Length: 83
Image (cartoon, rainbow, N blue to C red; front, top):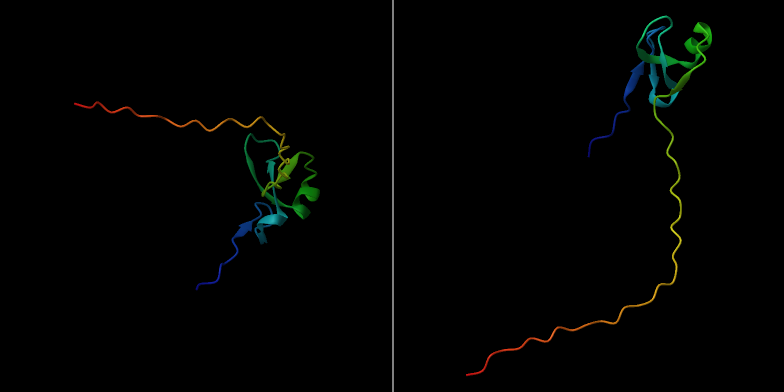
């Protein structure tokens, strides 16, 4: 079985490879598009609005089970024609 290779993401400013958990998506200063930056470059460029590349998973809310009335099991009666 082949080993899974981690994907490497490139910072747009310093052009180094990083793990996806260390990369952030932010808007390019003075431009109208977003790209990937590392934490060091975000601080260097003084970017204030950014979000992680991999969005953290939100824990699922546990479903509350309430006791409901049980339905009676109905059976179908079939009729056949007799000659």
